[in-house]
Length: 196
Ligand SMILES: [Zn+2]
Image: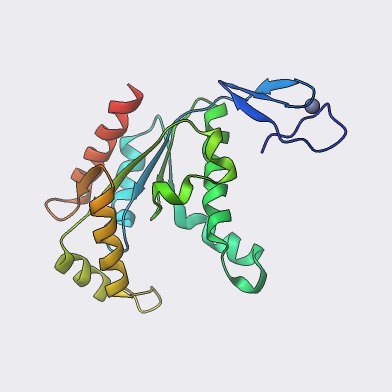
């Protein structure tokens, strides 16, 4: 992500606090790091419904839908197969870029912490905070059934992923006990509790 501008070879710099440091020549440049907030959830969790309310509720952050990079990645990847680790890594780069302007990134995407750990961009954000949007299985199944035909509906797979996220993510925000505005308000509260 950061390559030394002094060395003749492309040397990847390493983070040190809010600096990037060249391991070869010691050159440094500013590289502010902030935590990343991932609002995850299996399909049918209500991410799309929550998004516009979260954008309005967190004007101090940059709020993104992880799906927004899928189209460009389909075009960029050979045979139209999305390279998912590369796409997740791209979002880590976006978050690091936003941090240079002092802005926290809130990403609504069906990612897990494990999928982000180990990616090249992971060390350019500080903590990764994960909250999961969740709802009852029958609600999720009904939402998926009601989807437009072009949207994918592999219901059993999404129910299994939802169960995994429910069991592993620390913070759960329900989307089946109130309107999406209310779920967005709870997510915004969770983000603010971390950024002060
Ligand atoms: Zn260097």
